[in-house]
Image (cartoon, rainbow, N blue to C red):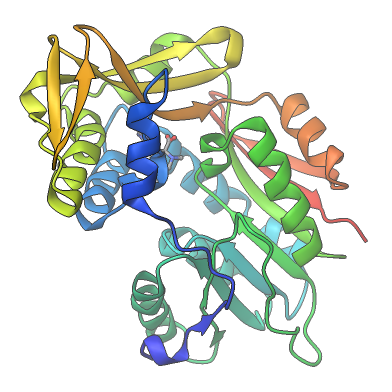
Length: 320
Ligand code: AVI
């Protein structure tokens, strides 16, 4: 399988890194959008984060899925289609595919056709009998999926990793509305990180090896590489803390001194201690997540967690 086999959504919104960086650096409170973390280096750093002893979400979710795969597969039913939002978790979807009864088709949706083609090839090799149909599209926007296969069972969305937590509450609601339209009559299997001891959260985003700091700083390095900005990475530090009233980890890049950053003929001023807000990672209660999903017409089903109640996996019935 090559990129030729990827269905490309005509309306796939092209993100504009330069325009978004300019908008973020000229805002009264500076920000950069977290979607830009994931260039090749950023994706490799994120994979490294997932292996860190302090970063519990990936392995906790994996164990929850592993432990409850049979029950989840029974809810999915025979000949189900799995629609994965994002194409980054082949290990996790394999747990489902291995437990499912005759899965009909796997449709990963991702903005990067190249990333999709790669993961689709790997999965197709491991499951030669499975119909793998990657779709290059922005799943935060309205999109069309190929029609269900004749005789296919339920269509089940899979959105692991608590990526939902990187959306604002309004964006999360918008995602649920769009997912509800795509999954009509089916269900959504969603991973969500839970509210917990702030010390555990703090450690997960301030790892001892400094990988999360590198991941955060890579945003500036990427802007230097791709746009020609002249950020001196040594003049910024990684800050991540839990904002309890908002139930979210916030990541920032903080200027160590008063400085100007050049970008072509432009100059961007930073005060000492001034921050660029780079990411929010919301943490949920089951009730809060259910309220959000129900606002978009989903009906709560089973919730699975680990013994330490660190992470949750939700079965949500899609609107009819
Ligand atoms: C992808 N996302 C769910 C991660 C998170 O935990 O919010 C991104 C991340 N940022 C720092 N570490 C991991």
